[in-house]
Structures are given as C-alpha cells and as structure tokens.
Image (cartoon, rainbow, N blue to C red; front, side):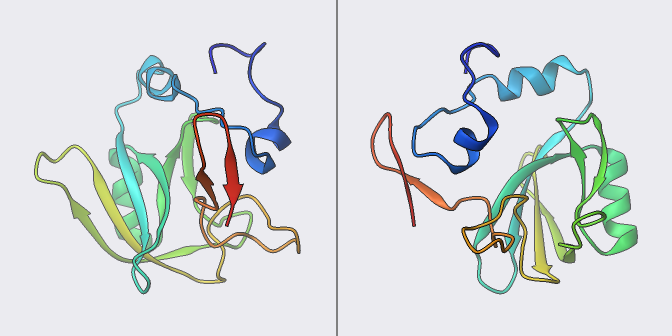
Length: 143
C-alpha cells in the first residue's frame, strides 16, 4: 500500500481475498521514533504463531510483571495490554530473545481461545491472525 488513496477498505483488507501487503509498515514504525523490537506471539501449547507485534522496554517489563502479553500499539502509539477491552488475554508462559537480542518470542496461552482482533463468519474471535494463505501474487484464500 503506497498511500491512503490506494489502501484497501478495512473490511477488504481483513476479510478479502486480494493480496495487499503493507510494505511500508516498518518505515511507519521507525518514523514514530519509538524504540521497539518485533515480538512473535506463539501459542505455547500448539506452537501456532498467533501474530507479530512490537514491544518497547516498558511493554516487556509490564509483560513480565503482569504475566500476560503487553505490547506497543503501532496504530495508537501507546502501550497495549492484549485483552484489556476484548477479554482475549494471552497468559504468559515465557519470553525468549533471539541470538542478536533484537526480537522477542512471547510463548503464551490464550485464556478465552481468541487472539486476533478479527472475527470469523460465526462471530467468534479468530484463534490467530494467519487465517489466510497466499495463493499467488494477487490472491488470498481462507483456510
């Protein structure tokens, strides 16, 4: 997505089958001046990757203190306790750091089953954010 005039509508982005990767995301995050690292959130029981987010130093401290996932919201530019409003809390099992100490892995256990902010056709919170697969350079398919 080059700019807002070419960005797909929110529903099309999250529920559509047209591939529209946001190649500008990291540049946008860097542009805020916020010191963050990527965080992979993984279901500790199944090994499924739930989603990728970001954390700053405060988010990591809060995650460890609360025992549940706390992140840095790049869309709101603020600390975000996953599940504070939705109830979809991700209980912390452990935090790991990669070899270069520039990304984190939060191994978590969903308290209510959902992790994604989107909902499936029945209205239930999706268990993870990777609910579509890339078919080709322009098309997505639901699993």
